[in-house]
Amino acid sequence: MLNFDFYAPARIVFGRGTQKQAGPLVREYGFKKILLHYGGGSIKKSGLYDEVTASLKAAGINFVELGGVKPNPRLSLVHEGIALCKKEGVELILAVGGGSAIDSAKAIAMGVYYDGDVWEVYDQHKPIKKALPVATVLTIPAAGSESSGDTVITNEGTQRKYGYGSPKLRPLFSIMNPELFFTLPKNQIANGVADMMSHIFERYFTNTLHTDLTDGLCESALKTIMGNALKVIKDPRDYDAWAEVGFGGTVAHNGLLGMGRAQDWACHGMEHELSAYYDVAHGAGLAVLTPGWMAYVYKDNPNMFLQFAVKVMGVEKSFREPEEIIREGIARLGDFFKKMGLPARLSELGIGEEKLELMAKKCSGAADGPEHPIGGLKKLGWQDILAIYRSVK
Image: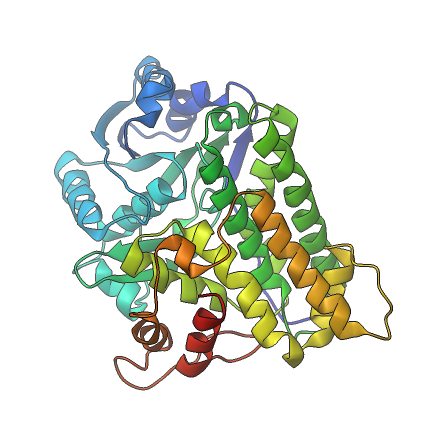
């Protein structure tokens, strides 16, 4: 197990009706003026907007609004939010939505204090000294951004999608009411499940030894999410199943599962190119790429994939044929994604051959200068990335 420093202060306020606590929670921390940040019209149609704003008004909290967040949140709206926060003297940003709204809020939060274009932070991984506090009301369990210090933004002008992380970006508090997930379309449920599972895979598949505790936590979280995901696909109003899936998404990305182990993150890097160029749903792209990545790299650490196949996917075959067990485990993962209604090929996402090599080179940095191979379990250059893309074409 590697050395680590774990600090995860995000406060999770969980349960029925908790969205009505937004105002009192903001007031508890002493903030008087906030930015309410959200996506399209869904929170207004559902009545959530009215509940949150009524709670803020009753608590005496002044607020300004900025809607319009899209999936794969855009840099242009972040710039607009930064200017609004500076003009209005905003003290906290309350994001109401899923990972896109929260990631956009985090970008605005650090851009308010950054001397320059906030895109430089993503592009050059510059350290930040300060950020506005962020809080959330979660409507889509997927990205885990409600408890992490991570944010991902798309620069629509350059078609680049980059992530950034800092402890200063962890939300002050996050409200999670599983009832708010009841009206999610099934494709959003499936995409969210694939995303949270990928957050665990990126930590789970490691070359680090003696990680029994976090191995078991990863395996338990994966089985819990998968078992309950099938229940919510069948009955989107199953509160208890949603509670397991929703909190599973939080645990998947709050950092705990990756402590003491080298991590991978190749699938996320490869998928960011897909969604930057084709604006596909992040979870859908991950569902396509993950089995392809597994099939490409498993021989570099077969014992890790053998453990996954047996302990997570429940494969029972002769241990004298370990590769058969591994291949069956990967196939069962693909079958699970299929049951969730997720795509299995890039062609299902409208992605052909034409940009695969360019995306592979951009993913590894080879398109812009010296190559920086991605991944932890196996280092992948652009030729490897291209081979994975083509294997799932």
